[in-house]
Every structure is written in structure tokens, then in C-alpha cells.
Amino acid sequence: MVSSSRVPAVAVLALAGLLSAAPSAAQEGRQIRVHLIVVHASQTPGPIDPDAKQLHEQLQRDFRYRSLRVMQHNRLRMPMREERRVELPTGRALRVRPIALDPQGILMSLEMQDRLDTRVMLRPRKPVVIGGERYQDGKLFIAIESDD
Image (tube, rainbow, N blue to C red; front, side, top):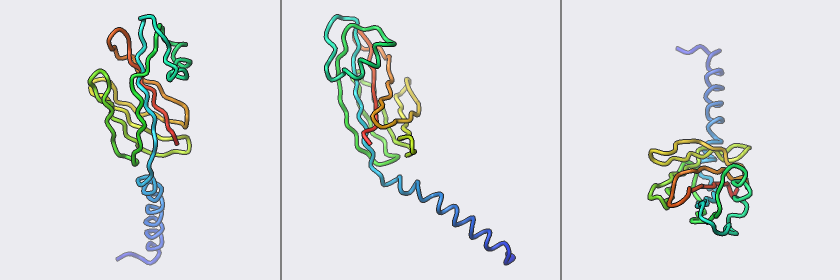
């Protein structure tokens, strides 16, 4: 038998549990938008793709290459916790899944078999760059950013 003094405490704990679950339930139905760009950086002389200008400004400080070409643009719209697969030029698939919303941005899971298993915080209009996988005469880089 539960004493009457314990019932309010149990009710308060149950209500607190429901309230703390409410934000994640609201997140579940939310659609998020992500822009994913795959570029090929090469030592072969050539142009810097105008579509990769912003990414070039970010990469040129840390990597050496003589040409940069956009290979893919993917605009993904997906519900929270739902996975999308993006086929890469290497034949591998990048699995992208939004995990949680945060005041700072969107926490994303990024996975690529035998290469990558990480979580990143995507802030609006601030790309996260992942890369370095060899491809043809250079390397691939993937930039992912939140459109929200």
C-alpha cells in the first residue's frame, strides 16, 4: 500500500517524465533540411569550380590541390531520426541521420562502412567538412550543412 504522502511525489515524478519527453516527441515530427556537397580535389592543374568557391576558401588553408570540382549536390529533407543514404563516387554510401535538435543546431550521425562513424553538430550555414578519401588522382571531400 502506498502512503498518501508518497502519492504526490510519484505523480510529480510521472509528470516530470512526461514533460521531459515532450521536446523529443516534438522533434520526431520535425523535418530538417541538409545540404551535402561532394568535391574532388586534385593535383592535376585545372579550375576551381565556381560552385565550390566557399568550400575552396575553407580548404585551401589546410590542403594542397590545383583543381577543385563539385561532383554532387544533395539537398536532403528528412524527419528526425530517419536515415538517408547518399551514394558517393567511390561506390561507398554515406548514411546521414539527424539525431537531435539543439539550440546550437542539429546533431547528426554520419556513417560510412569501414571509414567513418561520427556525430557532428551542424550549425546553420556553417559547413562541416569531412574528407580525404582517395579518389582517382586526388581526394574527395564532403561538406554538410544545415539549411535550417
